[in-house]
Amino acid sequence: MPLATGQVHQGDCIELMAQIAPESVHLAFADPPFNIGYKYDVYDDRQSDADYLAWSKRWMESVHRLLRPDGAFWLAIGDEYAAELKVCATREIGFSCRSWVIWYYTFGVNCTHKFTRSHAHLFHFVKDPKKFTFNADDPAVRVPSARQLVYADVRANPKGRLPDDTWILRPQDLPEGFAADSDTWYFPRVAGTFKERAGFHGCQMPEQLLGRIVRASSNDGDLVFDPFTGSGSTLCVAKKLGRNFLGTELSEDYVERISKRLAEVQPGDPLVGSADPLNSVPQTPTSATGQPRPKHAASARSKRKPSMARPLLTDDE
Figure 1 (cartoon, helix red, strand yellow):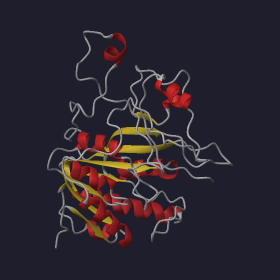
Figure 2 (cartoon, rainbow, N blue to C red):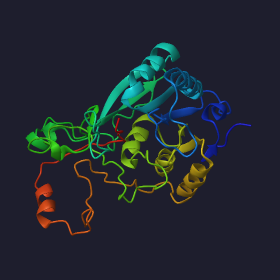
Figure 3 (spheres, one colour):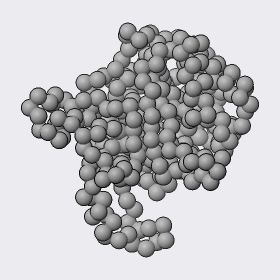
Figure 4 (tube, rainbow, N blue to C red):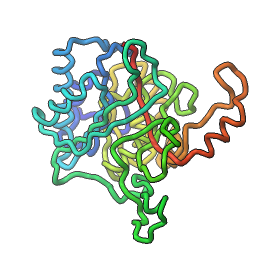
């Protein structure tokens, strides 16, 4: 029996994908285990290189099978296997890579024996490089151009422009702040103090980042699929944006929690987080020591130039 849409199913993603009709999914987003020893509920994230790469090829082949001819596949992955999985997806499975997005971030786990990791990779794959969904004119996807923000040029396209493929978390770290004419993406990391935090899964993507991907690579009513549903954010965003959705997840506990999250959101609900990429990360009213934050810190931030960006997790190896 085919898997029912509008919910998350518990079990092995490869086995469950065999129950999804071929060429039925418009958009697949996958944030798989990175094989770096992360402690999941039931999955063992310490596989040999050969086993991990063979498993990755199997589940990506399954994604390729269930995608429509004009479908898109977004893959989030860390440094360790980014190159291998890109080669596998394009040279062995048959995907075409449209964009290799570098997602720059800080505010991660501090490393002591190497430079602290501050980026992840987002691959945008399609089945057919000549026929695929990409809503370039969606105003929720586009950003203001330098001609609009800086020069007030009458020749500027009032719709703005497409974002760059480098997404920055902390533009305030750059010299003189982050200039308005540098149109990069800004999405806050889902930190532990954020309202968006689901609380049961550490690898949580921010809704605004997922929203840009869902808006760009699918349309109303399209089927969005996540083989590693994790915290459930992909499905929640798809539901809010009026898409049909389907997920698989190995952990029974995660499935129960994801189902509760899904029941609490409705189509048309706003995405959590700032919709304006020029806004910075929201600040908590007190510091880590419990003391009120100095007023000058907030005022100094407000004087900085506009920004944009976003993150994932780092490890200390």
